[in-house]
Length: 314
Image (cartoon, rainbow, N blue to C red; front, side, top):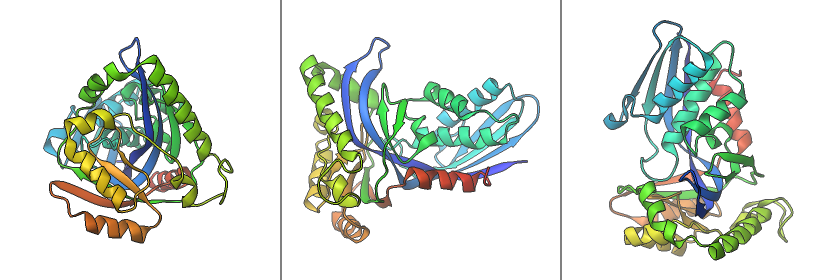
């Protein structure tokens, strides 16, 4: 039975702006995604057989079975490819759930990539990308990895220059934030005036990420650290959970730039100039009811190299 063992990497958002609620009830956003080294472990097995079936097991019991977004990914791919077979997926969750780090979306994308590599004929990348957009807003990004611009509801993905690898501290409190509730509270604050200002700020930040756009060194951590980044969800999530605002302030005092909420939370991250500074900051936090991780950013080239290895060079 063919088996693919891989890691489903987490993401952070290097800035996130919510513009307005669309007619389809989703929200129009502008964001910059970035993959990081924190990951779930995933194993996908496929055997040609009838009837078609998908089995999902996970070390977190409530994520076992059809409730897991990875189950939907496997079933949708089998149906689209008109493939008969039995799929078994084992997931070891290490990315905190409900933290805004895209763990579920990354698991789903990993299933698309792993299972797709075992089907004959093999589905095209364009097919996987289309299915990913159906499964969830963040899922298409995890087919690409690295640093990327996210438009629409986040499913429109455009690669950005990766720059140098960076170290970060991720703090994941035990509490979870409801993305739907965060959007509900943010919606009344979305005006035409705020939309224009956000678009201008976001365009300035994205342009600053382009090579040679800033004075001084052309490459290296200092370029990114000069960019002022924001996350619109902080205005409402910090009201819901004031303790998260304190964590952000603590990261900033320890030298993080930027320090931001991950997506709609509850996790936060702080970027540091090098790994030693990040390790010192992580040791200094001493937070109760929260886990802290020192991670590295993963470039698009590095992301693709990992997947080539996991897929056996295919």
